[in-house]
Amino acid sequence: MLAPGSGAGEKGLKTGALGLFSSVAIGLASTAPAYSLAATLGLIVVGVGLQAPIITILAFIPMLLIAFAYKELNAADPDCGTTFTWAARAFGPRTGWMGGWGIVIADIIVMANLAQIAGIYGFRLIGLDSLAGNKTWTTLAGVVWIIVMTAICYVGIEISAALQRWLLCVEVLMLLLLSVTALAKVYGGSPPATAMHISGSWFNPFNVGSASALTSGILAAVFIYWGWDTAVSVNEETADSARTPGRAAVISTVLLLVIYALVATSAQAFAGVGTKGIGLANADNSGDVLSGLGSAVFGDKGLGWFLTKLLIFMVLTSSAASTQTTILPTARTTFSMAAHKAIPEQFARVHRRFLTPTWSTVVMGLASIAFYVLLTVISGNVLADSIASVGLGIAFYYGLTGFACVWYFRRQLTRSFRDFMIKGLLPLLGGLILLYFFCYAAFDVYAKPDYGTTSVDLPIFGRTGGVTVIGLGALLLGVVLMLVQWAVQGSWFRDPDVPVSAAARDEP
Image (tube, rainbow, N blue to C red; front, side, top):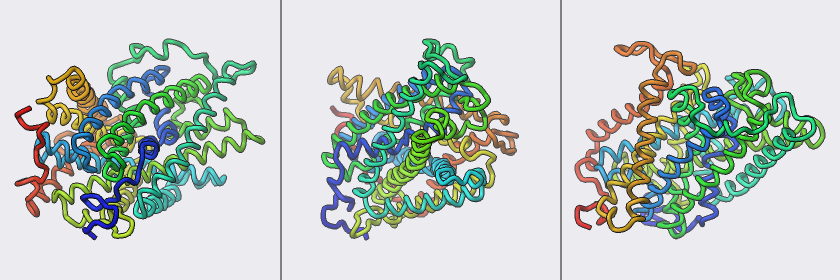
């Protein structure tokens, strides 16, 4: 129903349902630290070798800069459409529409990876390793995971937040235990054959072999931080919506830096960067490094067996939790777009009892399933190709948010040093960094036919890397859909109902 119920905000969502702790938990859980490391750390090592730890740290910089942009924009306009609404206020309805589409397509693409990891780890948890290596069965299991998580998001934000808090606590504790145990064995009396002592050279980015390797490595590492903005996308359901979501976004990125730097360093020290066995550069493990690392660190008997199974369960729940928190922001983005009449009004419907978006949530789940099945059919490696291509979508809408912040507050930048830095210089730097990575990766690194596991023979352009085709093709599809929406229901493009605030007007 469109009408708001008891306790509903202006658009009908449930207000005051989340506090700071729940918002931070949702922001962290949406990045899914365990899942992100399992799916990405190996790919980073393959690209940059021993410099993987510093790459994970460098990727934090643009994320923190953009988090400041989210914080300031949310304080001025706590709309669950986030980039869609803010870019529309700053640059106009067409740019805003594409910003919203960037969020939607990035989330839909990553759902393929989340579902695949959930399917693989689900079978490994119960000892069915043969099914874990079967594409048909893992795809089926992944589809089931998407359906279950969509149902949880449909039922209510408070249930989603409570589940995230419990899952996150177990996840972080297991990652800390894995890191401490690995380091203890590396520096103990009988280190594994692959062990290496931590070296200062690991933290020197100039030791990376080439600019293309550095760029692709950082863009892949950006993926492991992505998701903290979910804490902002549920702003209309958060207590003190102008302050709490922005604070949660910044806190989430800082906590992620600590977790990732520790795990990346300890895993590399224990397993090394070899191409065989548990080596992080082993191509067989590049899409899933934690599965084999767990048994090597903890052992496979007694308590070690239990901890290994717990680690597998943690990665499974991490991917499931991230599946849930990926649906949340996408559903709220399309919900806001519909409420502002930028897409069909059916997407603005709210459940009378649960006070959650109905159409937006269900359609997000169905679109994710469709893309996941399609990618499984056409791609040789769902995990690698989906991670790489989603990096383009992330860089697009995060970078756009940074630029929107600068332009939105352009008349306030000379009021104080803080305004100049937090509302201007830092978001601008974040946007420029992501713009560079987007262009360099999309038109050089990812476009090469031999990059990734899939290539497509395009007219005019010839054989092109599948990662660029997926990433740019998804964004170009948004342009087509925008033109269709403009022709069918053009009120948003003629007269957008996001009035320009004093912060964005020409006068101070």
